[in-house]
Image 1: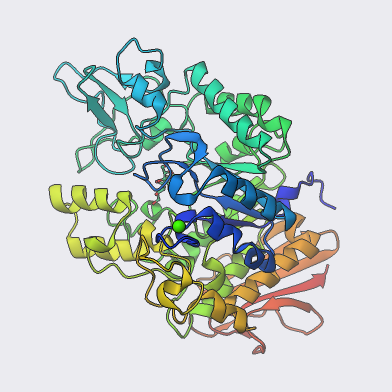
Image 2: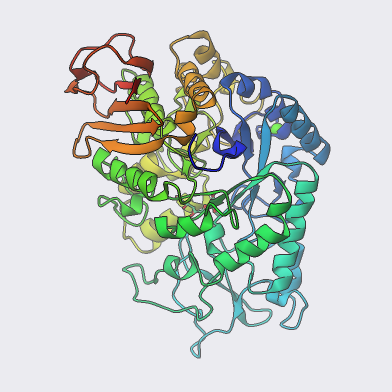
Length: 561
Ligand code: TEU
Ligand code: CA
């Protein structure tokens, strides 16, 4: 076995549920907890070990639950605490663990703490948030731009100060410099752990420590300056997480994954260090952040798929750099990202399933804990945005208002094609259960339109087709559960200059896995599988052409060294 310490969360496969869009049990058009409970057997059949629930706490839903107004109550639209307790118990009966989404970089502006804080400068809760005076000319303290467009500072005329919000103005940032804030957070975390949950996904946890000088910087063409470099991986972030670990995490056997916006590999080695003094693993965004892709039109907004060489360079770097130093997460999709088969694969009717299975192979045979986002396992695709009326996501709407309407930096048609490519609503269309009205998601009016391709792409059709993407994911998960080399094997890149094939090895003791995937819709030469002495573990083709990989063909073989 590898020298690495073993842990249940290193051997697990995680399934992310966006509750609003998963399953509606009471016909109000909004997914809910009882809808999840009703589909636990489906998830057990897939073989996943953990469900990560996007936020289910009380929220005004300015950012669909990522703006929390009460951490100890369930959002009324999602159900009651009894519904949660039942979901937790039913999941545990099926050996499925539940991980909660912890959003403590900010709260909702409707949280009692903020309602108090904004009342007066000497209110006991004032310093729970980040308030600063205007400049002499009455402007915001600096030109930082929010992640959701516009200034990151909101003026509050009751007390004549600005408060910081890295996201929407209804998501004021908590002041982690204040030990009372840290106490409150550790207390609510412990409260959920005592209820028996199995871990936390920590929303933008890399942003909880800001540079207290709030430095300004050069202005971009939109008149704002970069905030990210001053709020990500800040001066006290590791101190805070080590305190969190001592006070809460170390008392329980939890999965902890930090959503670490702006994290580098070097920083990840601290957040997810193998001493276990902070978190178990982190999500990075290098392969999914459109902004870094040279074809980006503005910020994250791009309408061109990233090249294989771009993606492989990033994923291989993380595989090699974390080896033996820190544990990693593996994902293509989440509720903020476009659908993987549309973004990185080919969602045409001809190639959708082949390329979905190919992408799944590339990811699930790598080292780290893999995450499956709801609908990824049946090859759900992006939807088409024909107008702004199709958009409900605050990030999209704010970007349209600033870049298209106010500043005219982007043309509306280009912006819509960027929404088609990378808009967050792509991931939030309702789960497609069957070919009945609204894909079986609701008997009411869905809060967000169902993708019109649901009659073809749905769970019922997938379960009836032994060659479906679903059963391929089921087999990949089974490989991880049965072969230690898939979990603990060392990663070794192959064919690093190929523009068509993503290939690598996994090595553990005398065993070697060879993984190769054709990223294109053309047949390409490949001599990695010559000779038939190797044992094929999985492929998305039943037959092979010696010396070639067929369009979007993926193969995994086991050989001895
Ligand atoms: O996302 C953090 C974040 O950086 C996102 O803004 C992401 O980079 C962007 O949406 C990519 O297009 C977390 C949550 O996952 C997201 O849903 C929330 O909106 C955000 O924090 C604020 O809580
Ligand atoms: Ca409902």
